[in-house]
Length: 152
Image 1 (cartoon, rainbow, N blue to C red):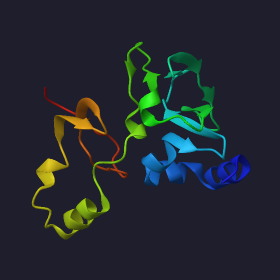
Image 2 (image 1 turned 120 degrees about the vertical axis):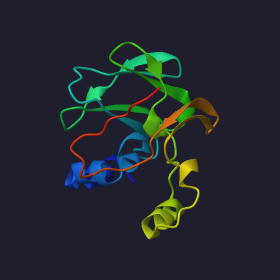
Image 3 (image 1 turned 60 degrees about the vertical axis):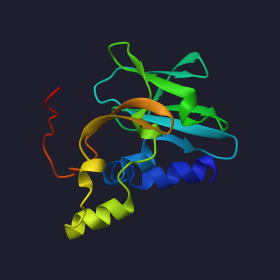
Image 4 (image 1 turned 180 degrees about the vertical axis):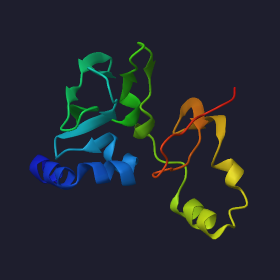
């Protein structure tokens, strides 16, 4: 898909893409034959910096307030970049990883027969796609007005 077609697809209803499946919209995605784009959601942020292949780059503001984009080489993988938080902390992009709650999990959950739900939801230390870190709450709450994480 070329840049024009990708932009048209996203601009047709960009926030619907973001709300219904943020992994399809945020993170690292193809942007044509020769490049990819990193999309970052930081509401209220005046700027966002990304470290790609060891080089700091300022992401450009996207079409929506809070959305930032950074075009990168087509050879870029999830392990090749990190995002700076507003407090200066450098961390992996959570949307660069594959989701850990899959279609089978959703099917079993919706039927009320997911007997190992504790293995895919909740918070724990883990290694996912070769990166050590913490996985916190794999849930979608599209209609929620507020979500809080407590404990630790």
